[in-house]
View 1 (tube, rainbow, N blue to C red):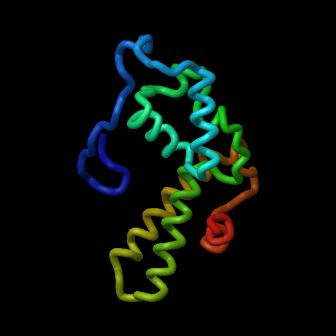
View 2 (cartoon, rainbow, N blue to C red):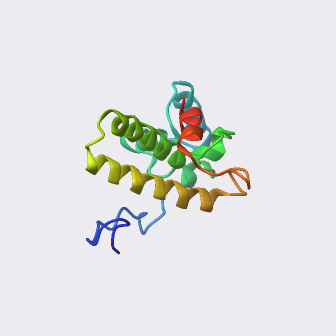
Length: 146
């Protein structure tokens, strides 16, 4: 499959193991939930929590062990989903850069591509995780990111 904003083919990404047998994991569901809560109290994002549990604690899948995903365990009522918030943070940073460096055309192009990804995600999340009438603009993104 090709990448979103180029004509090249990208890497396929990771996939779950074929055998979902997790008998070798030394943590049970309650211990994994406690680890998730501890990492969340330290200010970690859900994607960071999953990566830390995988790399440092040997938990291949939080959902397989605990029965819920990291975001379901946290029950976070964030204003925006993590991926959308990260893209908005990137767009705000690029906008500040392009205001200071008006001749940086590659940054202007990257800002345009990032904003199109944001609009695509807003359409996906509209009604479920963000309000139905919410639209993206850079000022709203600045307020949401801060």
